[in-house]
Length: 127
Image (cartoon, rainbow, N blue to C red; front, top):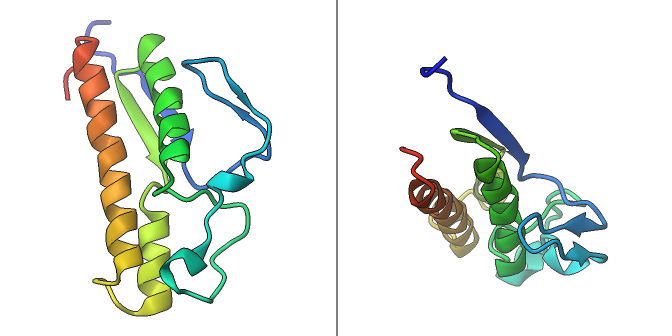
C-alpha cells in the first residue's frame, strides 16, 4: 500500500510527573521544571495545572524526542494534539494577541513543527 500515510500522535498539553526521552532513553524523574508558570510573563491568572511550558527548552527537547522516535518507527505524519493551546490560553487570559507570552508560546510551538519537519526530511520523509 504505497499511498498509505502512517500518522503518529503526541499529546503536547499534558505533562506526566515522570517521563522518558525516547531518543536518549533518559528517564526524567521530575518534570516540575517543565511545568507552565504564567508568572514568568507577569500573568497572575492560573492557566491549568499540569500543563507543560512549550517555551521550555527541556520540554521542547522531550517533545521532539517523541516525534523523532515515531518517525524512526515509520510515521509519515505526526498529529500534535493541542500544540498551540498555550498561546491561545494566554491570548484569552490577556486579551492581547501581541502579548509577549502569546508571541513566545506561538513561536515555540512553530519551532517544534519546523524541527519535526527537518528531522522527517533528514529521514527521507516528505512534508
